[in-house]
Length: 84
Image: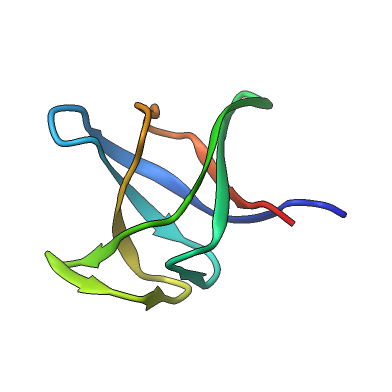
């Protein structure tokens, strides 16, 4: 099984632990994702919260920019993959 790229981190707010992700594919609460940078895995977690324009949503689609609360810091430019 291979992991499927779903987007890229465009910004990270370290004080509140939120990654801004531009999506290339659908993403939903409960999905298992991992962040990678330069081919190295940063960390993996389950999506617990998605926001679009400060509104909580259960799913987001391709082309949307979302905020994801993360358990660990991530760097701008990190790629986001759905774990198969």
